[in-house]
Length: 272
Image 1 (tube, rainbow, N blue to C red):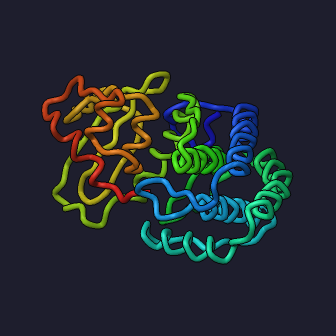
Image 2: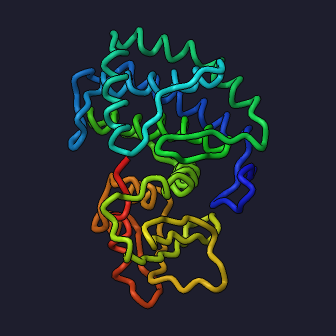
């Protein structure tokens, strides 16, 4: 499925997304019910309890859209941190209650996703306008990555499927231009071509104070060509890992005239 009018990193279908969301949701519930509420992942400010409350807040944003209401959007990335924190505090309740509320929203969200027309578009945070597919992928994004946060907090395994991460990377690349750092010098010019298994060749090009994310063109002359698993690239893009860890997790620079520029790409974007 491609409802954006452009060539996306990877195609998917409503059926696939529905199946993957349902599976991720059940895994999230099982883990959330058994995890120590006060445990905290290294490098994350929130406890398990707070992460669960935040996921419910994200679901409530979907509920608002489905019911024809609006939700509070961030104008810039760090404002989103503030919004997430304030909404999380307001939602806090015992974990069983949070999960019951989340479960009660499942039919609303599923019906909303199933009813989205192919040409649907929505305003995201930071001014990004995204496709209906990415609206749906974003829910998968929250379930998988926040499930991983909880699992790492309590030291239990959390299976990461590469296909799921490829879908998450599709979202990450679609919204990345809205997350360009305000500290990027307008003279910065970095073009990195991505070779992701099972995906179309893509480039991320930062220039003139903006960022582009699009399919690679025959005339592109990237500074660096990187071959990297989707699971590594999405974590690098949202700054859950750095370039050194990315190299340990499969990132390889395989071409380009200025390969060192690949290591500077992450710094051009705000962390998520």
